[in-house]
Length: 154
Figure 1: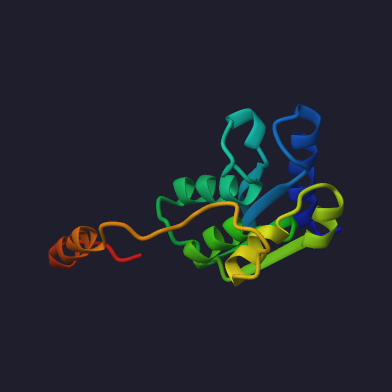
Figure 2: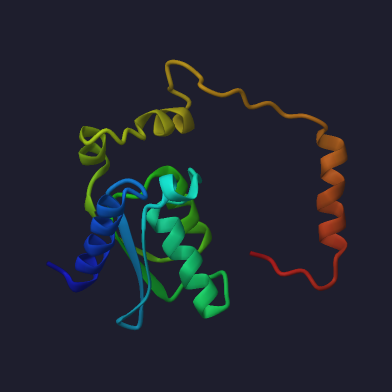
């Protein structure tokens, strides 16, 4: 087994053994060194965003003191869900290695397919309603942002 995937695997085992969340683990690697290792903590944190990949990204960004991880790779025991993939993209992580795929996760009871269908606009039923509201007022925030002198674009 790849040594980085083994570290992610060991993190997933922690999640299973502690009951903190689902059977998922992730590590972030920079220059051949693991700089962050985490497991799913959704149940322990009462936080639906506390997936292994998100937790690892949070640890890595704190450790490096920056929000871009463009010189890192992430190893995760399962194909990232849409939320985690979004976070990986926002963090600019250029390489993702995963063990099990999303169909494997679905077979274990972790079905994200409805999210993919929702994003594609092919979901048979909408589980949430998303509507625009007060656009003009909210556009003012972008105007203020664009006028700000010391902003950091991310």
